[in-house]
Length: 445
Image 1 (cartoon, helix red, strand yellow):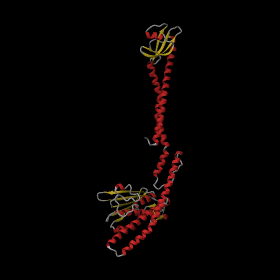
Image 2 (image 1 turned 180 degrees about the vertical axis):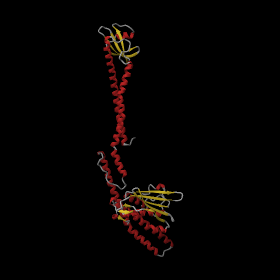
Image 3 (image 1 turned 90 degrees about the vertical axis):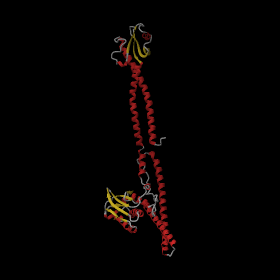
């Protein structure tokens, strides 16, 4: 069963063309065959008129007539004589008729001269039929050539007619997941308007549902932050209390859990703030990417030193990009947090900032275990921590990074570093370069 609308239209129209062409060809063939037969009869009549004066010799092909037509003049005389076949012909009436002569059917025209003598102009029906068929087939050639041309034109027309639907599908496929703007109806066929209207209605309902979920997440994270902070303070206060060793271990686990919950709430709030009202890229301020990254590195350097991790720059070039300072700093911090969490002690994290074509590149390489290949496709999904999660990550960091990069019209790619002497993860962020206008330059918050 063909599920393609294009295939159904093409096959349906092709079947109509072939059926119509076959029916028309059959009718044209029969008409051309009859016309060819009548034309050959008119030739016999004209030759008979010329034979009235007796200038043609009996029993021989007529002069001036092509030999392959096999037309003969038969003199029957004034009285029946000669072979039995000729005597039989003498008894027939004047006119066109088909008779048997010498064991084969012939088409002949009998005539009587004023002096009473009779003659016949004859032609074998097999020759006549061959000539008629040849002429009829020649008539069919234009139709036979027209059918493939019509099929090609049909395919082009069907493809052109469905092109607005293909463009509409391409428009939807090219959109970001959070782009819920209505589909335009201008320039689309009227048959698609009900479909577009339904899709736009669905987009509105989905937008309302997404907004409700965002508000719920933001409100829940905001409401939970106060009690979590209070619990964290209470847990910190327990550190000064003289407790048994077993209780101190439980308090340490409680602090770690509270810290992880607090980090999760901060990530949820950051995501909610960014999705609530993402700014247009052209309205964003200019930011020195190198300065923003240096500030985040300075904040995280004590944490790296505590773990003996060599955190530093391999290459730093000054480049300007457009973006919200808070979200850009959040993106860099999440990437470095992820690298610090996965890099073992005495490891290394190298940062590079440079230009490639018309993009500013931020590249971060660590010496951790990398990401399992099956997880690379899903690593940007919210709350996905991979098949072998390590540390106290929430699974939101890379998801926030992905959304920030997309909001800045950039791209991000992750790849594992494999080699005989090292392993790790390489993160490459491409951001469009912006013109350097000092009066608009902002630092990272």
